[in-house]
Image (cartoon, rainbow, N blue to C red; front, side, top):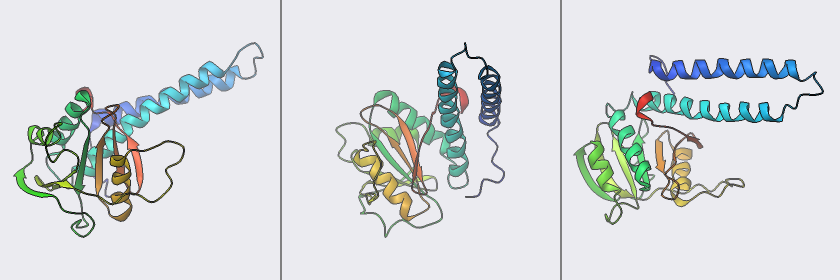
Length: 207
């Protein structure tokens, strides 16, 4: 996927420190395992929570790595999805990478405007006629909005996924596109790539 020259040092540092802390917790857990008076369940729960936190930071790091070679506006995109998340405005944003997507999506309304976070946010504002569809980002432009994506046909396990998430997975299964999703119900942010869905965090302190 071309992660060469990917820096974002603050994120890498957080991931490194987090993994080291988890290794230390595991080593201590192995030491206490021989003590019949010590219950490991609490420590295992702590390790699980730490791993989940590292997963979101790592996903943010790789999200920026995947975006930066294809658009200079990845910080605007990150800002937009953070604001949308805070307001619980659902969103579906497709970033075209190497594979053209015209044949895979049902086209919406052409936009052809320079990408800014405020324009992205306004498209997904509730009541906007285009807010239910997907925005297509091509390089540094919003190419179109209100696009319809193919839905995944694969079983998604026990966790029920909404239409936006199924659409993100569906397009990522058929192309190298990266698809961002903001949940309208929870405000949670995730991205789909190569047919897999990852949670992310976009806190301004780590961008």
